[in-house]
Image (cartoon, rainbow, N blue to C red; front, top):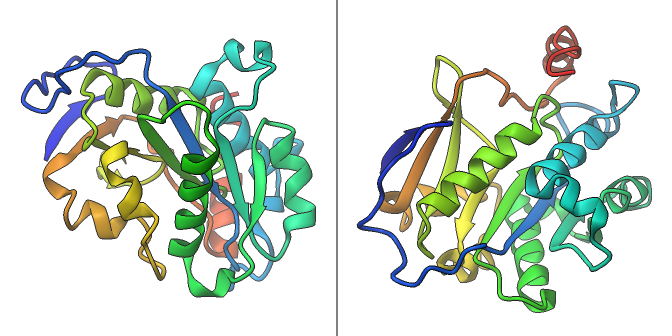
Length: 240
């Protein structure tokens, strides 16, 4: 396991792929199919900065992935959002940011099913083999494009098919999302079950290949309960 601060250089030479394949091709799987039992409503559709929480997340992912390049591209982007019961409400939002929306008909089976669906969809439909897939969640309203860019940059600078980049936020060094998995883990991701998600890889077979990226700002919080949302609302003006 290797630690690296955002905006700092690091050496990961023992893991570097012997073939320089830059620029790397990175896909995004956005998980928006949770049932939000503790929240009592769809947290991705909560109001945030004049739009929704989901708009904020999608905007950060889109801009951090490619910035102005995205708006200039007419081809299909390697973005997929995996929805659940509220597919009809979520689809118009995610597609406006370049995501294709696919529906998990069984969200009650856990987040792992959605991860597997999303990764499988990208692997099967991408016209270019992907070097990595960024897995993100739709209820992280403080996520910024800068964080997304830092995660992708850390992966690129320390590239190997087994590299996994996990951001850690703030003084408490809290692990969070989005997490970027190298292509070696695609088959593993497609076999995840239950609610553990990518943690089964990060704490299991992949633990020796995890690169911890420290994000100075404490902006990794997601929304699980009404109290979480009330607390985050006081920070709504941050990063504007």
